Length: 332
Image (cartoon, rainbow, N blue to C red; front, top):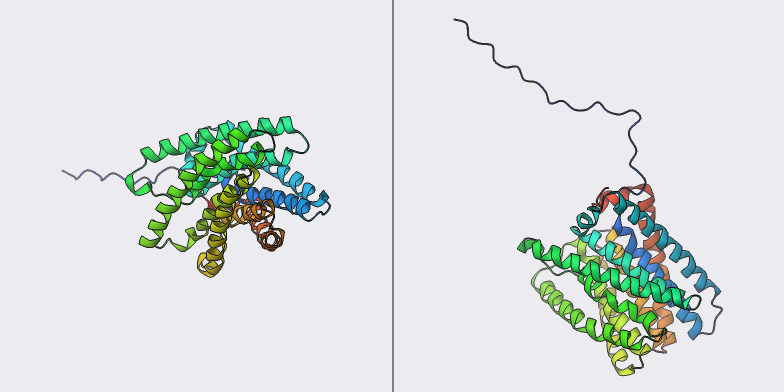
């Protein structure tokens, strides 16, 4: 009896390639990583406004920057909302990766800076933007906490991005004080200081125990942002001594960052360089609020050299489509 013929191997069937290739829908993979440098540009615009007031210079250029960057923030935010409208699940997918968590937080914190930019022109709209930004950021914080609880132990590491997720509310104080909402500003200040101190302490212990890999080192610059914002809001509230303490802490952090600049950037340019932008802009603003215009001008010159450079590189990568791939952005 003849042996039965062995079954023939059949290759896996794949769909025929499309020609021309199907194009990805507009904003389908909108990368949240574009928002940290936009946040830096908004902060730079506010620093220029404060510099113009302190040095009694024409305010037109600063207002033009704020107007242009606010429109850029609005355009990018609408792009992200289009992506979310197509598939709401992309929000949680973006929050699973570090660039996504930093980007989504920066997008919402940008609304708080837009509120500050609107103050001289539309106080009512600025107030609405302030409360909307605080509410949305509160929702984001809850999502991040829920994801943290569900994550495996090895994924529960505290990172500098936690400042954006949980301490970023303090940005609301910049608009709250001029709007007469001093009680809200006080609550934001004293509610976020303990969180920042906790994150600083845990991060310092982690840094002593383990050196972060080169690509993640730029994120260490985020530690400067809370100190800068605490100094600004405390000064606006008239709490000068507290403001000077945080300004001094910010000076120590900035000097440490400058001294470690080569070590921080050894991996070369990456989208995470967006973390360099908003802290230095915030520190420049704090010095002008504290009536230290000479020092503030030096830091502002540094910010003017750094922030547009980083923003241009990241925006260019966004326009080419490379930013989404490099930062593992979710696709709708």
